Length: 166
Image (cartoon, rainbow, N blue to C red; front, side, top):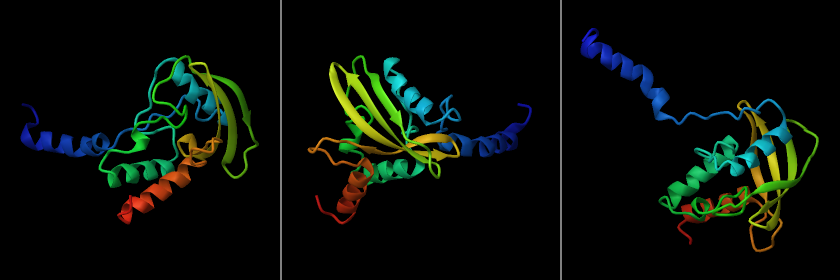
């Protein structure tokens, strides 16, 4: 062994921080603009490519998801539904319409229509330009039986669970 135990310890100390935190892979279209980002997000459903650690979401929304999972001991509705397709599974999901508002102060909205398994859905994605590129900062759902805002629902659920209320 050329470097011995001290060399091994130094190598582990140097690489441990990189290994302890999941690396966020920026989308290849991160700098291309919000429309390209949304098309990239929904294009991943066509290839059955999944996201790791909610990387499509903004850091603030990921923090809300993480807190929600911690407070619920890992079992939450958010683990069972994909907010961007409003589904657990997808079948031939594809965008049918996309309208992106002008960017103001690193924020914009994208109204996206898509078909999943023959069912048409429509959502509004609030997008935020982060140092890592465009990310989804909130998902607005128009159906009255769902909370209209993913962010608001997570904040409410987290508050209730933290206070011990069901």
